Image 1 (cartoon, rainbow, N blue to C red):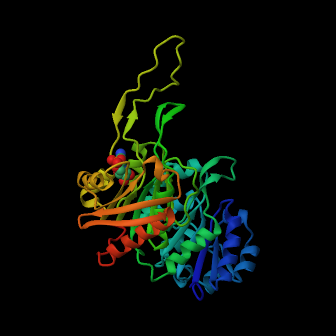
Image 2: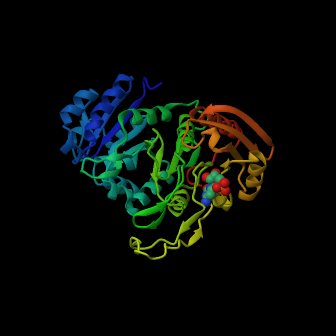
Image 3: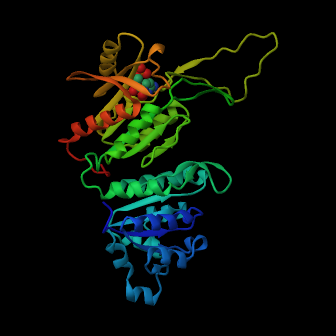
Length: 407
Ligand code: C5P
């Protein structure tokens, strides 16, 4: 599928640049011709010689190089490839891209290109979560730039958090998705919520629920596998981020709603998270046990309903909004009432009474409820149920008009 394609790979200055050497190798293995631009910072981490040897091509570094310009001007460099990949993409390069700067060869090429751009951000987690970087990401996405990662985990700086560059197979998968022409959800944007929420009681305690996030994460992966550009907003789970999906980790229901709003506009929203219905008026300090004293009283306030909010988002309402309903009795009747109450298009209802083992388990028996009736699915693994749901969504979109990223 990738054979015969050409990629312009921009390597900017992050420790993750060592993975870019492997990326060049794996792209070459697949018959992709790779030409590389190395920023000044990138050249601090990998040598031009390694990049040239692995790409079997000249490496471009300097916008003012007479030889480079004579041989392959920056305009040609920016237009000759089928796809521009920036890996690693530093916070600084993201900022320069968002601002439309052209202060080095990489930024100039990115400004002059008429080709699709895929970035693999890599940075310290504070830099990644900084509002400036997140705003830059949204600006770039609104212009059609696609991103893969970053992942959460140990960072080279010794901290733990989000900011680790996507692994090479994930970047290859994203490149493959780019070139796949026959994926039914290609060009569609999807938002998936997953996992529980944690509602703090005080700085050390919280209220949570038993959702594992398995079903929501599987839905995100299945939509991405059909070509959708997926943002997964996940509460605290022990699962790894699904490949090829932009994962935003949150704690509370209110954080989840904010992250969902930031992901709009989307064509598809699937709310699979088990959002806490109530939050606690959290104490600023740890609540101390008073010897012989009365236990503290928790005052609860209602959380926003994310599914209902998205369903009523006016011009920003996703074309298709899908909710889940975990019920322990009268599953269909309760789910039908929920469909009407929340204003969504479909409800995937499942029986979560303890005997079914659905919570935290690996299988699920779903009933898909919409205005046109009820579809009963057999017991399926959560992965298979997700694949079916994604296929069903693709079917619904087969005739729907395309929404452009800028809408
Ligand atoms: O009302 P209930 O929690 O049973 O509804 C379940 C559906 O609503 C799920 O799709 C869940 O993700 C969504 N939900 C939500 N925000 C809430 C409560 C539920 O998005 N605060």
